[in-house]
Amino acid sequence: QVQLVESGGGLVQTGGSLSLSCAASGSIFSLNSMGWYRQAPGKQRELVAVITSRYVTDYADSVKGRFTISRDNAKNTVYLRMNSLKPEDTAIYYCQFANSGPIIYWGQGTQVTVSS
Image 1 (cartoon, helix red, strand yellow):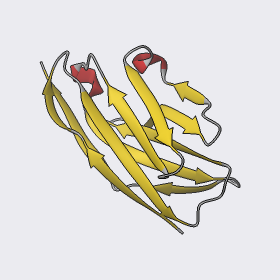
Image 2: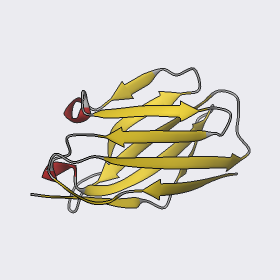
Image 3: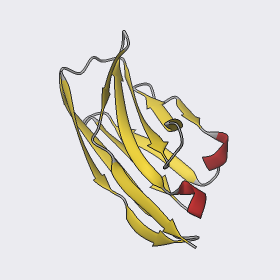
């Protein structure tokens, strides 16, 4: 089992910035990935960004150039820095951890609200 603890999020105006973090603990394999997904009201959950334990990253087109994902392997923590936020970024953001397999775990979610 892997436990995920998310922090960050909140309310920000258009153009502002927010940071999210997610710490994993438990049965963590050396090969894994950590990422962020989001779900807006009435929409499906979608990938925002992901980073592997070898620091390979991938981003949704909608956030490229504005969001940056990073991780600290020693702390098993992933970070998401969100700049130039837009109202359409408003959603619940979920941390995902995937052990090789894949065995997937989800965080509880944190609200990000961008006011216009």
